[in-house]
Length: 200
Image (cartoon, rainbow, N blue to C red; front, side, top):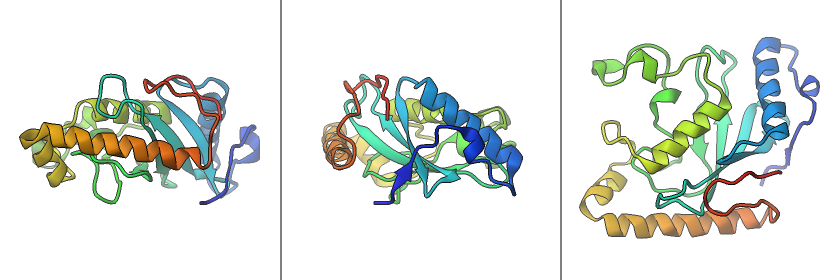
């Protein structure tokens, strides 16, 4: 497991080669640490790299993912915020819009402009005003309501439609695995399964 360190002062993590991008991310980091948001918690930076975040996403209430604590990583390009980050679940998760390797397929993380074949409008895709908070909120919404028009995992999509009971059983197993994996590193993260505030 990579050792993570949470930075408390954004001035300490402003990379000299990318001052504007890193300052924006550092401000968001401090804000999310100071004022935690319901639904997720910032776990920290990977190797003190402001362009690599890890977050813990709490499964939304009323969804099959309720009670889960899913670890995900955000990798920001040096062209951020003009271009979106990539997001990948590091804990096992089954979902029609998540590839087998954990990468998330969601409109908000697709490059700016209209999508190919007119499936996605520019307003649905990445815009520089988006933040880490808006990204994670969108992913939480995706967990509750999959987008069947843009599947990333056809097996999960087919199971969801043909055998929803089996799908929910598989998801519940993912929920259990997510909590077991997290407990080994963090045992003091409050989570009632519905996205309560967490302090790490």
